[in-house]
Image (tube, rainbow, N blue to C red):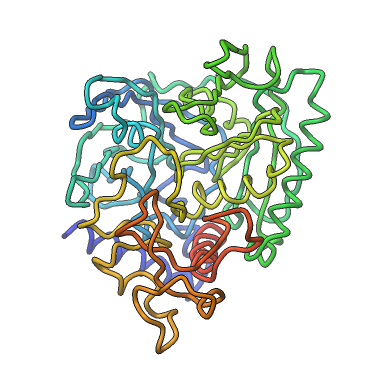
Length: 431
């Protein structure tokens, strides 16, 4: 409770001081951090019931794109949280929530009987003074528990300062300073060196798609998009059931967790290596394939194909997961997860509810007289309600609209609840 109180108090103080004078914020950031990235690579090991964290490597990267104002996470999204504490004072100076491929794998049948190791990585502004890097994981009651702590020393000469992978960067749009913008970096997967011009065209197309949807179009003067021109030896992606294994840079594959359309990569540290060529807040991987597929994890990465007929909507849908922490609102799927959302807990995601604590979700957006739960009847088609079915479950989990881009691709818009959640996240990154 003390950490929770301090976290929110510090965030409030940052905002108040910014209202008085924006230079105060830069002075506070500059007194705590250098304008570059400290990257913490680790291994995440375990099964359905157990997890362990092991240090892999510390790296210094040349850019920090994050807000100088919003250093403390105020959303509470994600299965995990990285926190940075100043060693001398014990002050919390930075935190971010995130989820990982490991946390999804823990809910699969395989995890009941097998231990696996996943490579993971978190980034933070590079501290000026010695600090503790801590990793927290949610327990079965939804509360964060400290699982790992590492005493970082600023004069540690084992921090790797050599950039592992150096590639040219293509600027699609740069309209604002990095610390006052949402900075998206697009990485190519399965594009050969002869296909880099195709990749550039695809990036420009997807940038136009993103800025064509509300509320992103309202922030067009605050969204920077860059692409790293990093070729693969072969095109496309792995497709294990057919024995197709491609020599690609990011090692993506369909049939992740044995779900055909779930195309992901578990080579996350390689993803970070390629992304480090540009300042970024969010990573988007574009796969050179016409097959239907993709995936995304909050504050981890998003991935989608480039040329399927639904590629544009997949792109927008997946970015809703990785950027805004939105949940899937569909329930008639073949996902491999077992009880991904416990029905006795309120999910962190802003667009689904178990009604355990609905007041902190979208209760304020429901018109008087709308029944809760809300029947899926035509009279409520364009209203915010509480419709049963969402988060991969037909019963016990509720979504805010009959349809939305986080549900099916029949819809061309996000529902009002998702739009509000995206706006809040855009404000967080761009102030």
